[in-house]
Amino acid sequence: IVAVSLYQGVERVKRDSADIRAQLIQSARTTAATEQEVLNAGEQILRAMGSLQDVRDMSGNCDNILADAMIGVSYFTNLSRIDSHGTLVCSAVPLSKGINVAKLPIFNAVKTAKGVVVGTRSISPASGRPVIGTQLPLLKPDGSFDGSVAITLDVQWFGYLLRTHPLPKGAVAVIYDRNGAILATNDPKVAPAI
Picture 1 (tube, rainbow, N blue to C red):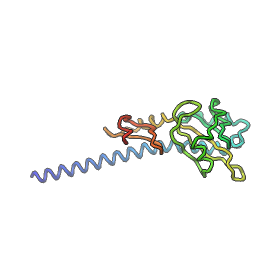
Picture 2: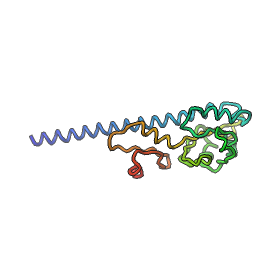
Picture 3: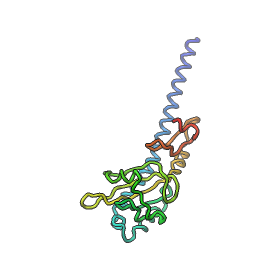
Picture 4: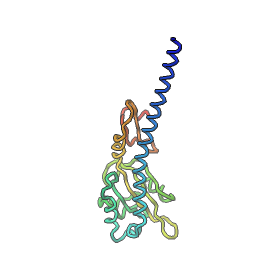
């Protein structure tokens, strides 16, 4: 009877562990999908703006077009057209016009990229807030680099999105960039160890 009871107890612990593991995996997938949807939305905005002639040419109504695209999109902080030298020429946020980002790793990466480049956590020169930048390279008809269209995501939104997905009791979730910088967590004491 004791052996059977021990066996049943061990099997129950294994089942409970497997159930908890499955819940944690599902929670992680759900959270990651939501964050990916935000990044995908940014990419769609970049592609749409990059196809508009006034934005590509940095002329006419470029600033207003970018500002209009930001209406109702609260998780992004700015949308800009950057020339081939790294200067923000058109921007949804007037304060950022004229800022040069040529020395930022994301701008150097986008010069040779074939598609969208997502940066790491940085501090916005315009707002002073933590952001994740995303850029889409624009090419001249001859295929040479003609600058980029850029959008910045306010990092605080990762925390908000994380809070919208309840986790099992005692679970810790961490969202971090490829350099290991923590973007959001539900437990700041445990997160650095993860």
